[in-house]
Image (cartoon, rainbow, N blue to C red; front, side):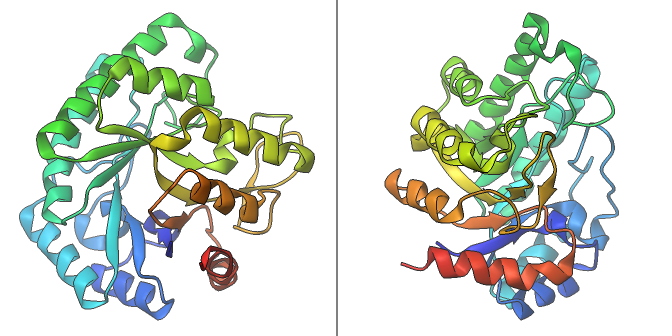
Length: 287
């Protein structure tokens, strides 16, 4: 298992600079976002993190830079608010997902990462009182099912993460989402920090929460995120290794459930902390 990063953790820069930087850090694998490269000219809005269009020239540029610097693009960010209360926003997200799927295929990559969304119109990550409603679930499931059909057409796999502020905010809802969609192209991201709800971020609860999530959807995990969370009553993410996530136990569970992918560090927005986080996880994940 190699240790990589989500490129959203780094500042936007030209593609050549981005992949050269990754190589200098010794990073050989990434979860990539087209908005990470300046050539895309894209800035995410409150509901759509997928560019409206991705031309073949940009795809070719990214692929050349990645290959030149020996960085494997293992997954691509495809976040849009799949539970947005405005149906036109959800439809636009599906339209953009089609173009992204074509671009991802052009990169030789097999995974697109998503979240289940929220009724909150200001952020695809923040909670809303209506997230638990039947209508929110139905809207999300219609969008997820349509997205899965797109993935099937392109031979790709969608990887969704649980999130306390999203419709899918528990392992059980993740299981229900996959079972309801019934698509072999719909799988999960295991982001341990996202498993905690307000009031749960206590060190003594970590192993039980992680074990439970793996028991519910561990065989369907296709991407692992290396994000951490601080101990406390709220939800405050932090650099990998600086919080309460028991990473030796996390990696043990990944191996127990025969996870064969890489670990992508996430939410390390202070670049000065990146080398230490890379050393920490790389040391744990060596056979």
